[in-house]
Length: 388
Image (cartoon, rainbow, N blue to C red; front, side):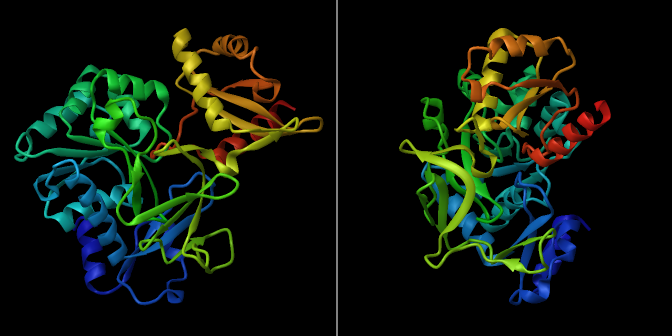
């Protein structure tokens, strides 16, 4: 029995179904009767956590995405959804759920296929529905980058009708490469708490050069708090969020007005743009610094200089004089790039300039393209302790 069939059986029995081991310990007895799913959060703040999403919330999310597709003259029922993401996360659950609601075709892609573009394309072209239906694909930026690095991966992407890209910020260099290749990217924003997408940018607007994640879907309202945090109101907010490192209870998400405060800092220009994590900002020498924005700036400089660097992660560390200073972890097979990077950023504002560059060959985001910053803080602490 597949994991999707197991989920169907549990929902048919009116149960709350945990989709990952982290959710098994959640206090289900505190929730109203099911059916529903306990979905692992893919956030970057660390700790085991999951959200309680009733079945009808998943239905509403699928309906909102269908409405978005019809706005591009696509019939949701006539599509094929490819799914390379794990079902334990909402980004892997929803492609299957959408197909289920729409009467569309769905095909799970095994992780091994995603690492071999030649085998991936050949396998897909042998599918009976291939070439007869518009193909919809959901990716995180890390997966997109790996496919773009391979000529056959590019060919595969060019056969898509829509490529939703979410889970993490789309680096400007990847966006530029995708536009040059006329790939139908649809940058989107959503979360486990909102049962996936709440905003998406149609491919035509992406290809025309528009940045950001587009407009809210039909069942969503968005606004900015006074401090720039993105707030969401929709009738598909999770019933609660459970965190393993807190008391065994469900945390309510919405305020009295029905708004949920996300952990993301955003802007409307006029479409939604995510400009960094609220909890990722550091205060250095009296300045507020957003490491994620600087990471994109570093990677743009890396690309311009053709340096062999796969990733850069900036972490705030305590400093007696500045409050906090940035330390840069560098993913590369060549430690000589550290000096090049220090030279490239020498003219930056002092608060934005890393005081230290650390060679880290294994540096990489999670499978969903998110940076587990606490994990790398712990790694840096172990490194410093070993060198002390």
